[in-house]
Length: 173
Image 1: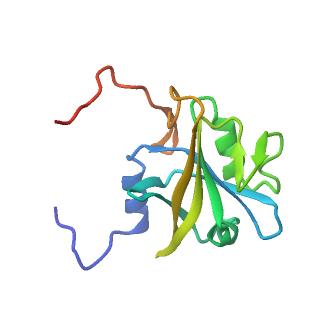
Image 2: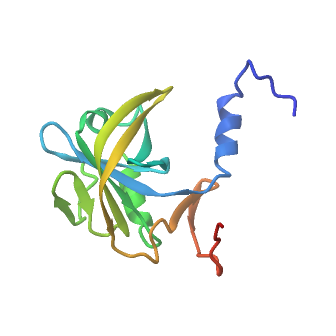
């Protein structure tokens, strides 16, 4: 490998490399300061800590909902399963009302009824991540609605894919 440690790779090379990593597709939601539900499709949702239970979400600073998410005291990660591709596309597009036609509750942050799992998070921290903000959430509730499909909708090679369980579980000793 002949990469220089002092010079980062160009963005197109990095983007192509990251496309090879499969990532679960989620819709991250909150209420803005006016109480309007806001949300976006995210594939950069990652567990961060078990004690306390933290996760991180990377949000582009160019996203129309960036300021709403980084200012919201609460947000939800709505994990999508196979069959939720249209919802992922609806929240990825430039729609004025991304919630149109979708059932959701109106608790601390919108929880999508169609999601296979909903994680309720209190904002723990917001960190600088270059052209993204890293939103860190303390998980306060887990609603696992369909254990068979949770995290089953993936983004891989710039398209949707479906995860399938491996026949034998991996165990550690």
